[in-house]
Amino acid sequence: VSIVWSCQHAMAETLMALDDEAFMADLSHASETILGNAIAVGPRQCVPLRQRHATDYIKQRCVLIGDAAHTIHPLAGQGMNIGLGDSIVLVEELLRSKMRGLGVAHNQGLKRFQRRRKSENLNMMYTMEGFKRLFETKDLHLLWARNEGMRWLNRIDSIKTSIVAAAVGQD
Image 1 (cartoon, rainbow, N blue to C red):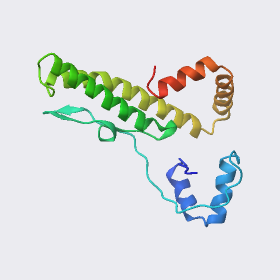
Image 2 (image 1 turned 30 degrees about the horizontal axis):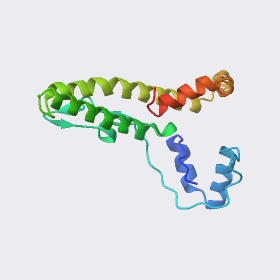
Image 3 (image 1 turned 90 degrees about the horizontal axis):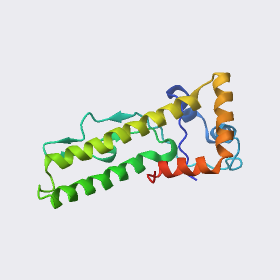
């Protein structure tokens, strides 16, 4: 199992300083032993996470897609999904420009690509940042509301299916 443990910088430093036994105990506790107790760990790495977004995806026949255009907190693995979405829409717009006789790198098609992807990517980035903050909170009222909301959501298959479809780009 490979695990990304997202936490504040100070906690990350503390976790990195632990010996393997203490780290496994903290990991088991933090994961509520959902996969059982941790019995072994490999080398750990600490990677600061920063959300970033390019002001423009296009400039002078150059196009930024995926992590070159935006980085996102790895909650729910959406970074790859939005990068694949960028690729799909870019190909669609390049083909559309070519079919209209404009040439594949015509600025009109590239601008359309940017318009289509930028708002969707920003929405996903804001959503993931909201989830990150919601799961970091120590406020008991918010914790209760979050947990009740997640329980409620887990009981309604149609909403769960819609959320999963949107997360994988099938909305």
